[in-house]
Image (tube, rainbow, N blue to C red):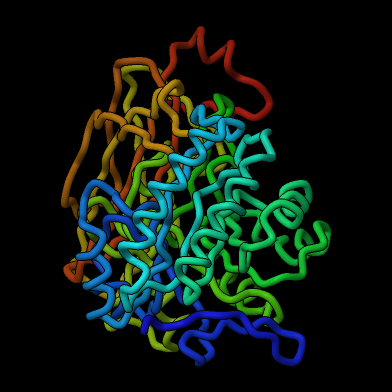
Length: 424
């Protein structure tokens, strides 16, 4: 018999019961990353976005989760209206449901299965309310075939029309799942405004999103450093997520791994080559009460021609620019890497977390001990300078700053009250 999940109410609060025992979700979104580090940090359940991620067999993933004492909120990928799917087409909806139910039947008895997640951000730029009719139909089918696991859907943000539509069209969902980044600081007020008092989990959260961040004069977002992100994550977990003891069942940080989305470092708690950042440290402390033996370093300041974010830095083609970093680390044997990348071509920028190509590297300086880095770029364009501080214990700190290489004529036309010119 598979483990059974349900949501109970005690003293006015919603309690998630996992096999009759109270269970608080200490989770992360994991697709391609290894699971051992997550379990060692104190995580207890992770979510996926789909059954077939093209990289790893799902049963193998569930088996490893079971060995590590983890459970899985299994994503069931539903087509999105913004990608062209028509939820007014009964035949297409039926075919999708049949394919989903094959996966449900195949996986429903696995002991590591925790919950079903129907789709990801189906409400993002969607106009057809029949999407929730399809979700309701599928939720009923799943619950009939598998009464032991809860069913939810993951929403982009929180808005009253979506909450109302789901309430009336998809009442079979057991709880809602919200995905919210910088706005999580206003989560209590938002829930009150939309009049949602039911159980929920936060299935994506973390640093402030690129769409919410300050921008350069040429509309490129400033990314917080790994230290600033860790501070935000710690504060948001302790002051927002944990504080809602009545309705919040827990959360899944985004992302236990690495991905390219505006930059290669914005959302991943790990770097492309596997190094752990400070955000993992603060989550481990929040989940277990203990810091890791080797904590990640912290970049405290990054400047380019003496300017730092959110200043708009402009450099003349061919002129020498000087970057400087200040950091702290417990280990003495640290190394510093510098990389300059082109910005993502605007036509290739991802929408709603879709695939985005990693921009090309223009120049780099690896494993330096120098706190300064000098460079020149002859070709006008939009670029971003990345600084990475590494320790021998596979931990790193990262920060970056966008800059524009432009001729004097372009600088004159681009400059306005928000631009601080930087000419060496």
